Length: 344
Image (tube, rainbow, N blue to C red; front, side):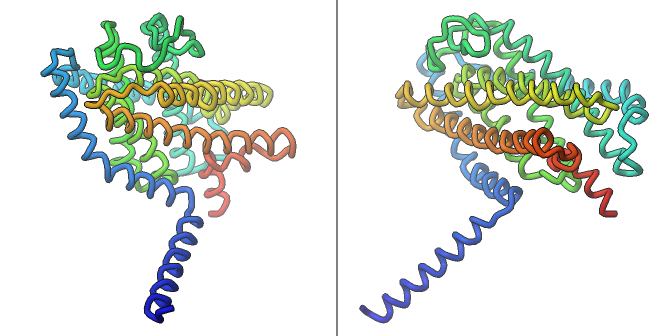
């Protein structure tokens, strides 16, 4: 063999082994950061593609969401901001007095803020889950598994708009909540959030999926994703808050079982079924080919994050119920303040 080719071959395999070793040894946060960079690198392409498809629909006299409707998001941001402020104002003193004594000093203040956020999330997702079912459960694309009737598929009547007066206001306010979380994370929590890139990826995925699906006239995708996610988030948020508010141990176990059942049912069973149905019955609409595939890819990434979080939930249950370990020590996902406080 030519010595130069042989040398180049060794160099190639050496580099390949280096990158394989580097990628295979990434931490969770490094992995999420890499996924976020990959996602952000293709966002600009889909912005132009979504606007091009929207213009195509206008030219073919198919109704689209007006740009003025996006102003509802600004109203939604105001609602979310002052709703959070109200919860903080009304509940701060109670939470500070009631929270477990294991938190002291600055760690106590950090934990109080987390609990107040979880309380708001619990109320918010309870409200949106009820409204989502009430507004859309009779639509033919709303899954039977979420209480829908006569499910006929996510591609029903695409690319026409949904003939339901509640679609746009509900959609824009929900989008505003995810956008608020993204902005707040980027501006206020970057230096203190230990799971910054994980949350950044999730909030970006959720916000982009909602905005792009609106531009592609695929409100069906967005509303189904919202309906699936919000149900489990009710129990997740309230159980996280309740644990530190002088919780009853038996109640915590009941909440955990209920959360795990709801989470797996909605996010690990129903959600993959929706994705699979969208892939198998894919509507080959040429003008929206890139956009529809992009929405499916986003949902697949979200599914991967669901499985990742399910792993943590099951590990907590195994260690608490089977091995008798303390919840605070096992749930390092939520309890970094305890561990950090112990090291200081």
